[in-house]
Image 1 (cartoon, rainbow, N blue to C red):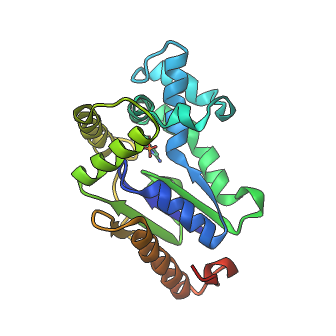
Image 2: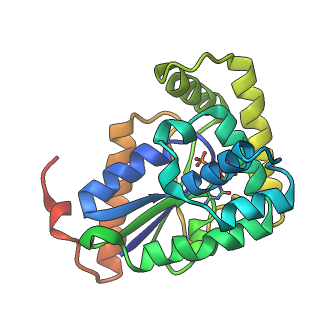
Length: 225
Ligand code: C5P
């Protein structure tokens, strides 16, 4: 059982992925954290995230254990991530880890859910369930601003707006693994949905998809909310 969950920045993937992981007893991999870590590692080494040799070296020697979640969730890390993510050698270096996680989920989980940009198109193109989450630009900016302010980051909204615009363009226009829905992805627009509503719709989709694929729904999915 693999769920591929893709979409642009701040569309609500992380929250949704965590809840689906819990409901269906799946191991969760936030694939963006690998690109964020590669970007931060490159900056820490005094390199340039947009320079191929610097970024590829960081990806090939990546040690996730040296980063705390707060190191990776800054806006600077997000921008560096989208720069390293446009470099084919970086994507190649991170591919095996992601596929292996999907194939052999850790901790005895029933399967895996991976969120990112290319999980349904490149990493796990055969995933039985694919969800592509979207939200309009202003909603995504507002969510990211709230998230960063709640973490105590001193940010300027106009800067976040400009960063997100640049990041969207880089993620969608890059030649390798651009952000786009897989042909068989369920599209979920969360612009006017609460987190609970988005979860309810995604969960209903997973259950109906599993039924049509004639797979059994893991027992925890049947648990009442
Ligand atoms: O999802 P998140 O905002 O943490 O991702 C940070 C950046 O990493 C994205 O803007 C994107 O450029 C890159 N990324 C990617 N492919 C993935 C996950 C993230 O290119 N599967």
